Length: 217
Image (cartoon, rainbow, N blue to C red; front, side):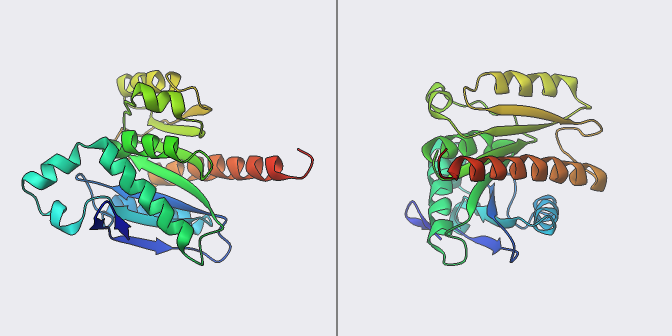
């Protein structure tokens, strides 16, 4: 998919009954072929959600060197590329009518929030897990999309920082805890819980959006 004068690669899979596509971005830390991300995407599709796993760095950038280093820490650039991925989903015949969920992990958190702030009418919700977002004041001010933070319960310090980050937001938000998880969210049971929490939250947001769209409201 075209984005910022480069071509990004992604894997799109949409179950027949899906009402939304979950975009799962990757940057320097992982790729879309990362087993952890694949496991989450598989679980989300089993729950009825479409998924797009997308690498925000081009193949050339991801091979290393100075160019890669410059792109990795440019939150604005990564956010623009995520916006381009949302545009691409909206242009595909099979997905243009579906809602969009941004699903960020680790270092993608800040760029995911920035992209969501740019797309208040197109992003249904944001789910962040395993990362400590530090959004800019401008992003905090503009963000209107509901945000779910999923935190591990085995690291109280990280949980407190997650709660602190959540309190900065003016947008609707919630923090939910997976008791036996660390910030790495490793293990089959832990991934099952993350998926169940995300599925419940996103389904609630879909119901709310449908209700708000009814005539007379």
